[in-house]
Image (cartoon, rainbow, N blue to C red):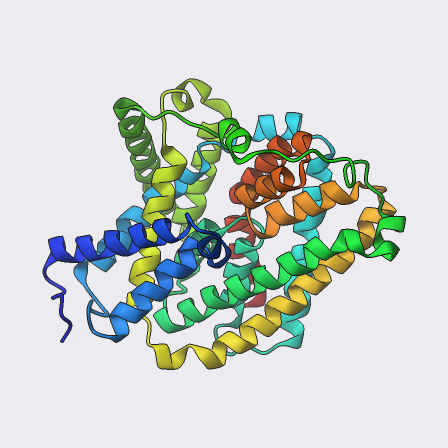
Length: 378
């Protein structure tokens, strides 16, 4: 029996939100940023669950999975104006499309070389979604395809973080390889001017009002209601997640007056997803993590190596800029914030906004791709 009883909803909610708050607090420090808030939150949940501080199962966990996760998906997609992406991302869009395609190829190559058991199709699907969009797409794809085993879920997310670290090390080493820079030159590398933290935050600052926050929640909930109705008309696995994803993209692209009235939407969606990560960690058994995780890490190493080799090869063929390839690859594998942060850190000012735009496009398409890959491999 756990220290906090499963039926004590208020205390359980306090525990979940405390875990999320600690994850955010850790990200204020350099070491926390390297580990990432999702992995910290998952680890804290795992620790507290296995020490029986919080229960392995609780009614609140079900509420978060069935209610907060669907509502979070539109909140995370409301800035995915596809018309703006295609208009303003320029040559970065081609680089991102290439990064997406080679990620998919890498996933199939990895799956053919590494056996991951009965859940292989689901593992490949959720990780491909994560490596094209982000952790939100991991969660959305997992829910759509019924990937719910807590221990395997946490093993996959742990491997996801390790694979991302391996990817970042290889990505940042590309400009140091003369063989690559000769074949894929860049007008940005070596011509950079550092951007201060204040300048970077000013580019992405958002003021929030009470009405803007409430409007975001109302709009997201309405989309989930309509998506639920549409999915009831189609007897297809994952149709609810696909429906709300498509509806969110339509609203983001064509209902600009509505979007102008909402605020703090992405941040709210992230908080909801982080609450879900805390419940996943709490429900996992630590003894079941390590065996599957090692195989999944091997799969991701193959995916990342294939991704980067093909990215550079086709980048040279299409005469793309190495810096743009690096930013697009980072936005694809690690998400829009990481892509923009990499551009800012290297002083490539003109690439910050395109990095955010193509990364948001990744959020828009990754869940559907992940579901599709799961179906193909099943």
